[in-house]
Image 1 (cartoon, rainbow, N blue to C red):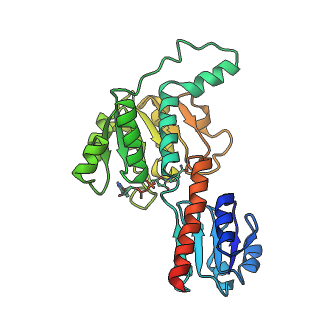
Image 2: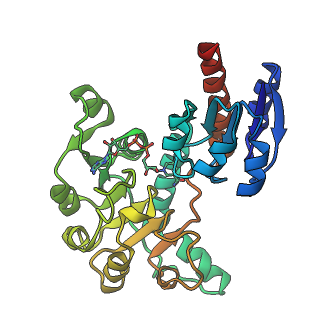
Image 3: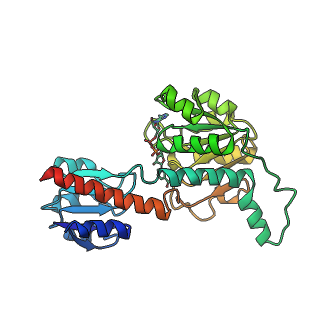
Length: 308
Ligand code: NAD
């Protein structure tokens, strides 16, 4: 069997494949044309958020059985075209949960304690001790929108690690056991917006969640509230957020994801001192990448056994 690895995958994952007797061909981020040629005799294709696996590419594959995405989103794969040809598509949504949750807490702390702002000013030679006064997390209310894998991990760290009160909103209510274990209370979206000192977004981007955090919700939030978004940029209406930050409807924001990525240079968000920005690094940790690669290979090896 032959596996085409079309994106950087952790070395331990590649070793697992080789140990299973699978021939490995590595080409990092091939163009559509290159991928169309390389895929002809591959049995398995590994990708990350790139390269694009279009219907055109899939139509060239003569032996392909599995497309494995090391990571979560399947936006770069034409899943319908793959499934129409009996090709299985798998991903590893659990692998990045902890890393995104920890970045979320990092952004909360960075905005609350003005860490990035202080760092910027120090480099300009300014000692902004007074301006950089912040707030503690302990005793504050965290509102989590989207109580799935990441939302729950954030809830656990916030309630157990920082003594925060946790509210959550989701289309599905968690079981009483989980609510008790994570110290989280189910509320409607308006209550969450009104009562939270921090609001953190963890829903997928769907037609229902696009601009879920828009002018209406931002205006309901407390004036001293901080918004964190490590989910997808399109869940927040960026124009409304900029207005909210400029006009003081809320106090600050920590963002890892944007409606347009990469964030264009000189974007209005980069001009605001009460915002902390990171370049979509939620899953960018050694551990998450190792888990994503190794979990993807394990799932592939299981599937191969079933397909035999
Ligand atoms: P998940 O599927 O485990 O959880 C999502 C939750 O959102 C579910 O509980 C679901 O019921 C809820 N939900 C869906 N639609 C909703 C709606 N309209 N209203 C309220 N709740 C709704 O997903 P996850 O693994 O926790 O990931 C959450 C988000 O994090 C996703 O958007 C994912 O793309 C993003 N993510 C970002 C990074 C990063 O690098 N920043 C990395 C991984 C994942």
